[in-house]
Image (cartoon, rainbow, N blue to C red):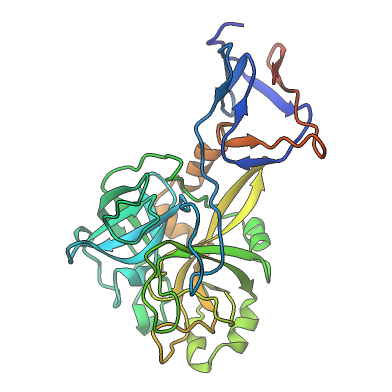
Length: 365
């Protein structure tokens, strides 16, 4: 078989399965499976051991309010910065969903529905540390903001923060690296409902306040928050807050001191799922509102998140290919997989069997 042979794929399967995690796919073989596309297979004969580039799997610990730092950057998380101060000041979070589109909260940019001025903002991805310029950061990328789109019905507090969502467009594309990778979006109702079951854990990261009357964290914090049924959220929330649980919101969190706080706004609520043996993270909500407190941060309350599926039309009007981008990024390559070998519990694959239009090829491992 020539190095550049290209044939249509009929199907492919693993001859034996092992556990797979997004990290690095190491192959010790005389063949390297370079890229698997939907209809084309490229096999390159190398004759040496090869190792694909590492893709970081975020490690989450504790909470945002009073919690410990995240060991590795969450590669989809973006920091939103205002350029009206020097150095730039972090005001909100966001979630990278394409190479230049970040989903955040409308209230980060507009409190009364007026169109925000994009040139007043900048965005940074791949950051672990809150300051705009921090020498500890590795793999950080920064860009000015060229456009901010918010739904036309958004009116801020007057309308109880209904439609609290924004799509931020960076002036330049970000390179996808081990530190910068997008979260996925899927608007399939059944999948959305499955991930948002009562009690299902989602993940939020941010640089928000670390507790009541506490300063903002300088290192990225993380919280695993359970989804709360909307009926329970409405019934058990303070009366003054119930009007803010609008029809496009979901609730998540605890009432025991683990909570999102000021500065976390706009950050993504993501849920993990194995898709084709890959662990992917799907954006389901955007940090929006929580009950007020005498202190700067109410750590004993649930929070509301703008439900992404309720804004499918708006998001796609700004970023039409947002769902396809996830497929293009994660669904067609094996270079983000790691074979976890454990001789006692798992018999790892000996080969991939790929059925082409006119032959069967086994890529031996």
